[in-house]
Length: 210
Ligand SMILES: C[S@@+](CC[C@H](N)C(=O)[O-])C[C@H]1O[C@@H](n2cnc3c(N)ncnc32)[C@H](O)[C@@H]1O
Image (cartoon, rainbow, N blue to C red; front, side):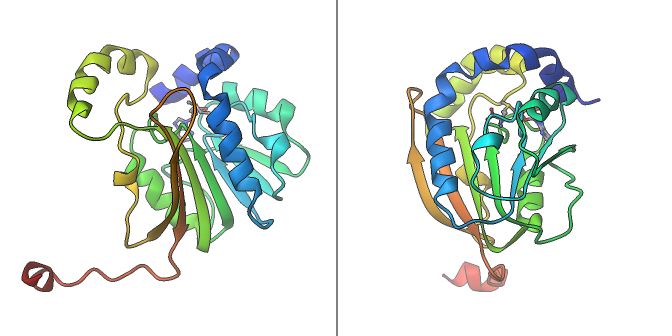
């Protein structure tokens, strides 16, 4: 079992305490997702499943690496929700399976967020939308903050400073929306859309000419 799964199994019961300041941005995320026309939805790192009873979308699939967190999610999940233990870096779904994907406070805790984004791109339909919510820090303060928060990040298994936009490959996704929410100023929501065809990158020589 991964260290992250082990950590979340241990804290599953008290996770709502960690979550206290995140309610407002999560509500915003949910209402943004529910404004979309109905479709199939995958929530990655579904945790205790707080969103599950509130989605207007069907069917809903939730995955997580922590059995402890999923145990709570199972108690809340409506009948049309399917919950599975699964690693976001290796999603066991065919290509183009979902109209929507939600990934809330997960990219900063997984070992390889780039691999997760590759998998998200693979399983979402062309034109499908991805809703990302996370704390973010960009710019010159980043390194300083990183050093200060390093001891906490290690114990709490998360990356304290994190650039979400850097994970979005502009040849594969279009950025539709980006906003900051909540009491913690660095909480950011991004809505991105999978391009129908990934844009070919110009050959290296042409890029040098520009
Ligand atoms: C900070 S919690 C967020 C839970 C929920 N999304 C929320 O917003 O409350 C992070 C969740 O991601 C899960 N997780 C961590 N690494 C994962 C991975 N590689 N694949 C799937 N889930 C993962 C954890 O088990 C945990 O439930």
